[in-house]
Image (cartoon, rainbow, N blue to C red):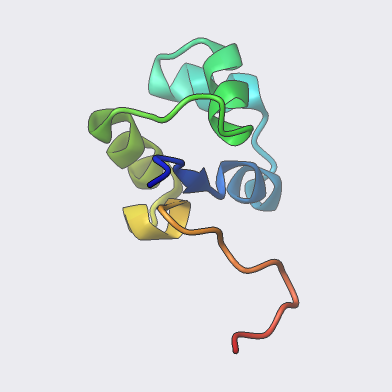
Length: 77
């Protein structure tokens, strides 16, 4: 069983016009941490995951998942 955590951080940042550095500053982390998260090279702590969701004002399930998110425009089967 894989322990990959998928996320939509880059999508949410793009939708809101937020840079990695701006998000990192708002969360109190290094900007490279945001890049590692977006690329799936690092899984956030529960605390950080909740703070990211809170920052974007969405439920944590909108940002993070244990299964891949459908691609934009892709229909569910």
